[in-house]
Length: 611
Image 1: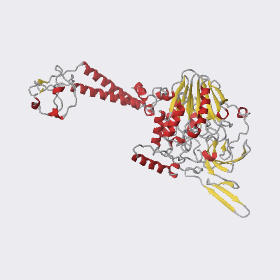
Image 2: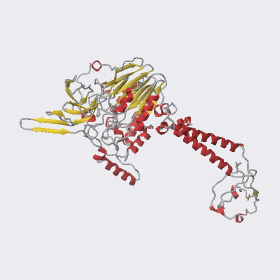
Image 3: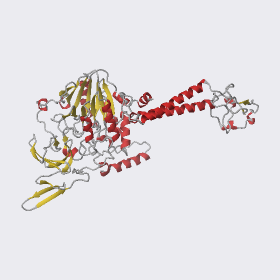
Image 4: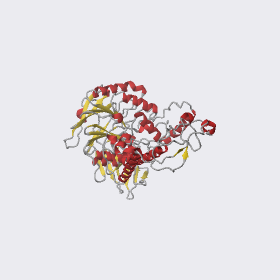
């Protein structure tokens, strides 16, 4: 029944996909039970029965429909050698006594002893085979299962994405869209840039990294989804899409499940998916599925355990392919530039930032088939030295934005990806200068060296006056020294590192104290926003003493580790609960229940600062 499971799932259902053995034996049992029921119906309809009836019992044959009689016992069919008629519903008038209807003289016919005919034997055979198949599937389910192409048929069926034909494919990778109705002319201009470049390839497609609506344009609402679906369909090409943190925040829905269901219905896709786009290339998409239920920041991009396990198995299944991964946020340890005063401070920079985030990098390090990982979330352009980073054989690629209201550094850019059988290339499309194309990375699969981005200094030699937004704070990954101490980084900044007694790793830079994950050496959160003018002393008990001394006073502040041994502090709580959004959603649900049209204008519950 495995092929049947693939047909039923259409390559889309993660439930069937995760356990096709369960579906197989379940289908087997259902078909077997159905065949047994069919034998019973066949017999009760006057067909040959496997069990002989009692002899000598006289019943009346069924009359034609015009003379049919209904009794409390139901219709009594005539034996096979006399005419019978299909069952049908009749009015209560037909329940009158037979004598009153003039039918008392119909002949009585003895019930015949039935014998097994070819049809019933065939039914029994099918039943037996189906039941045995179901039992076999059940026994197989009890064994450890390894992924197979049949088990994971979702990867070979492309759904909305479509299967690319040929050996080369060109892909437009869209960062955070944040479609704003007031800027749609600008977005359509950017779309024109991309379509012009996509037209140069015989096979092309689009991937959207989520965050579909502008901050004041009802993010996460059905209206937002419909607008984005129209924009993506306007490319005239197959597309894939993942969710971003803003795609599940609408007050039109009470739960994350309801919000996600609306997203799935609009885009006709599951939150996580994989699509074979050429003979040796597969795309994998991961989506956040939590907003309201987040224990910390609602804007943490979070995948549940089932999705992560699916990701591990899918990557393993395609170990002989070239795998490209797409998610809204990057993963911990990827070394991409991040915003320490926004995403790192609020612990929503990395995928599953607060929930074992190091797991994803472990998969990358053990899976050389993962060639590149594309992400957005930070609204940063491609003109930084660490807008593309490398870990092992995987290139992590930051994707910029199209919209003017969502850019942070006066750059509006999109990534273009060319994939062939022997390698791939990553480009920048500069929307702010007419859609010009710039090559940022070229990698051949035969080359065993790690992918190396083209030097940004060369790439933007003709760009003048580029200055990133100064109030966001930029994190650049550094390797800490083995011992406590201070160093001067390449930008001339002083960095001081502290190896804590419990294994935690802290850094002081830009007068801020940050905590790092020790194994990936990536920032996890902020411990203190302003250390200016104070000395840092690490105590034997693991606490931190911040000392400010002058001629007039001596002030100390003690920072103790959290219960789990970490030091980072929470600066942003769940806004769904703290900003009254939950109450607004409940109020709207109550209004919809009393509104016959069910059509309410969405309020603009938007953040003043993009996260």
